[in-house]
Length: 614
Image (cartoon, rainbow, N blue to C red; front, top):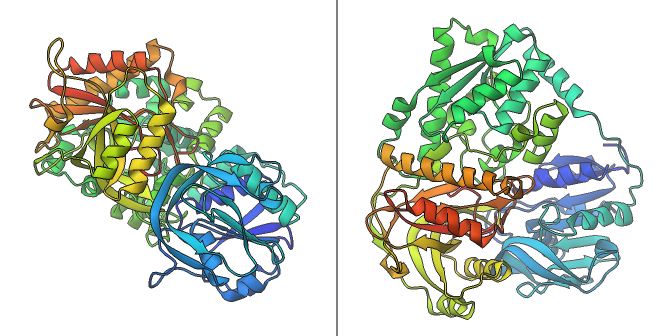
């Protein structure tokens, strides 16, 4: 870091720490990420310091902190979320537990200069916190607030200390880039812009340097990430030194294998691909498994075992080959790791991606894995694909998880009934024109930079016209106020026969596992959604569209949940606002599949829910 030109980012365990550095690079600023234990003398050449978010409470034992000497460097400091709370506490303020605030919030700016210079007085920000600064330190003033957070931003202008409870680094904070730009330009006085490098030549050179005289055995899924990474390796190395393996797990989408073959044929790589049907093995090993994390670990382990067996079968010496993967940064950070992909990262575990199981981590430790995209986000991978000349239909495919439909087919070992909402929740729901119940089925969420595994609220709209902004407010309110909930769904179609009406309070959670029949139902529903989106010209209107099969039964079958979302990098997301006419039409088609009782729409943002249910 050159003196007076860079920003030190202190990683306090937040999901978005790496994203802060990415946004600074986009602004032409040089960031360096440090552990919280960094000595202040190592930061004397920086122009400013940013304290990241994190999953812990500042008042908890073993909570991460920084040296007080960092605040005596004489450079501006910006605290974000947990960093905001830590800065306030270190300066003499007070932080206490609150009801929580997850997803969009309306910020009212009180002081429009410095951080909020040239931004609106009222703006949307993205929150993810369960604690709040309740008493400001001496010399500090509140410069912005929300309805649930009085001190959503504070400043000590004399010392150059600033704190924001929200996340300016995520794309869903409307003026987040402006706020970061104001900090680095107006506060830290960094003027020059760093020239953006051409990433593809650098990546190709990195691949050649990492591989050396070895070859690469690549696990290819057919998705954007693995295809771009595979093509990068194919461009960097002689053709005979790269080989791809596609494993049909039995949990793939309809026509997935055929599409992959066609895509690689267009790229001239069809002869470098092996296809292995391991569906029987995957179903055998996952029989009776219902816990999401256990599913993911088993799937990751099986991929490694199949890769090892394939290398042996083809006479490939593992000492002279590296395992290639299309891992991107969100895979690593959600798996509780750091940028190097190892265990022991400071971020909380949200869900273990199959490419971060224990066996893969061990291969990484041994230096036997190459992941050209491990520092990139989804939107950056799409840009790289375009730079490589890949077709738009390939680079802009909806993301599909490596474990496939196995993690979209929700399982349960216990039975249960729908329960009434609490009095406060029921009042909130009725006031918005809905009725609702609490379902005992659980899904994964991310709240306050930590993993949650909580129940789902099911709603029925009692009015004829849908109002998406009101639905978002309702979903946010239910997840913010009630700790047992991290996801909200609303009924689209259900009931047997003309004029029949599905009653939410009749919902039952049934025992269900990963069975061929259930996966086939999900595959058919997923295909109807994809074909419907294509025919309606809506494919480019969403970033990703998971279709989930849940063991929510009304007449002996399952429930399908539609989960269309929009995002830039996958770190945060809004549920997509698709035309109701389209949603109703495809929902009616799905209820025509034998074994489907109802279809719901997921109206939860990330946070508090993750994009996938598991």
